[in-house]
Image 1 (cartoon, rainbow, N blue to C red):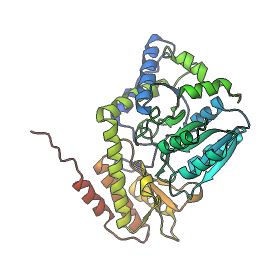
Image 2 (tube, rainbow, N blue to C red):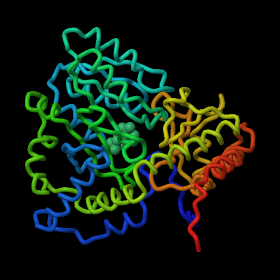
Image 3 (cartoon, protein in one colour):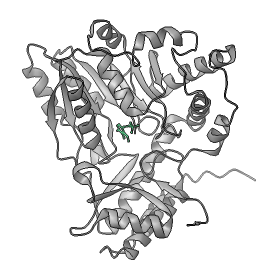
Image 4 (cartoon, rainbow, N blue to C red):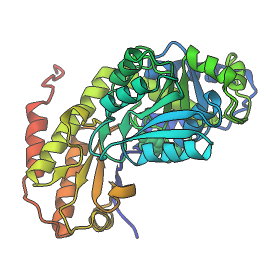
Length: 395
Ligand code: PLP
């Protein structure tokens, strides 16, 4: 069916790709063994480090985030190794399933999927592990299924306090470039990222930022793998090349997207997302609905998951919004299926895009017959107006 105007892509990733990033990728296919590619490769490899905030190595895979999850575990661990995994939501749960399939032994710390990782429980598990059987602690920084973040600095402190040698692995697939994250400062050993969210790129690239300790573990790990091997990749990367065919056009986009993040300033990007998240939560409360995340210190700047009133289907509501208003909202995943909808406010996004998004939610609630109070959009607009920067260019 013909639909005029732009589609509103308000899922929490993949996100809208800015026009200048699209244009940067609009290039003829290039020879990936040519000197020109070496220049692009070196540029992409060095620029992505600035987003992870690391002086160490970042590996770029032509793969989705799931591939980079597997790479993190397969490079560093051995079959039968114990891994402490915090089940904060559906993505943490999928990472655990992947670990099981690789022959690892996950020890799971559960939450109710409405808060961040339970740092006290992680600390207790590490203290109790006097034989150091746990080889890695895995945490999802921003749970895209719930809109809850986890305190990575506190998890690192728990490892330090327990004097535990386990590796710290963090999934930043939906926080990289949208929520403050510091691979080196926070002492993370492997950070797993993806291209399609805060980096404002199409899906297709994923990352492992690796510490010296992680590389040393990789030298000893005995899990079989080939495609994901870090050392082979790093050897080729030293001159800007890859051991196999890289996603050449996405790398042009990566350089342009990182330049764009720095043109705005990473801290300004993070603050923009936090402000849009607060405006969204104000709208949700004014509608009389509930934000899924119940602990304010874990609120996500990247997305807000909203609980549907009992007896109402989130998927039926999303269908109305999609068909009648041409807007995509995120669905509930795993045990949250049909119970929540998710509003993405990350990536290339501004006040008026948020106003359009929240207008669509408010109209959709009415059209779908979901009980709510009006005034959510108004509450968000008031907050956006009160907190507008107020800086105007002189004419
Ligand atoms: N981890 C998180 C936090 C995610 O949000 C996603 C995807 O949305 C994944 C992992 C899986 O990544 P992919 O779908 O790119 O394989």
